[in-house]
Length: 285
Image (cartoon, rainbow, N blue to C red; front, side, top):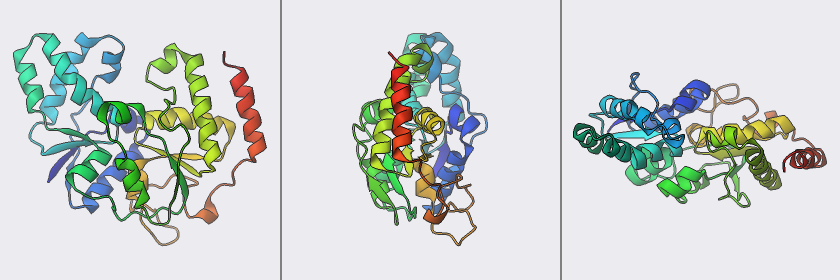
């Protein structure tokens, strides 16, 4: 099966290890994966900010770049939702019949967990990750794509991992792209609530299917020195049991602090973290 990797702007720029993990994982499962270098932004930021006309060249470009593949896989629920739910609307509003026809011919875009479970029909991908992990379902994947419990089914099959439920998991983390810039105080308050729930789990690692949300939550976790790492679903699923000193993802760099438990950083004492959260909370209306 010939697969195209749609990496997304944010992942390509800030989280390249996620893209490498997706390729490692899919190739391990027998897929042929291409990375079209001509790919650009899907237009989500423009669309969400009201610049729909400026989306037209990006929608056209997407169809041209990914034509001819059996499927397109992306490690981002938000960008998958943009392509599947909004590219057709942008094309229709443009008044260009050819563009609308091209969008209809674009290969189906799958969020990673959808592709693994629905297309490849697997939940056990042979992963090994000996850590305590909690999972945050991002808004676009949960509400627009309806991925449901697919990511959880994949995580439950990971050997050596303790998966703990995240309280109020379906609550937004407060990122929302430009929302975090335009409504910073509200965004920080929402992230504070999310971080409090993450800390309540006692997890070493917070996992999600969108690096944008992980970046937002991870920023606060880092600022609080909470001792909790953030890691994309793809990087956990690409991890395998490897000899000491080797990468756990067979060539995909394992983030610092997320190795066998002996090397994991000691968590900050809970009372110190709680104090920081109380201070952070008082700074927001």
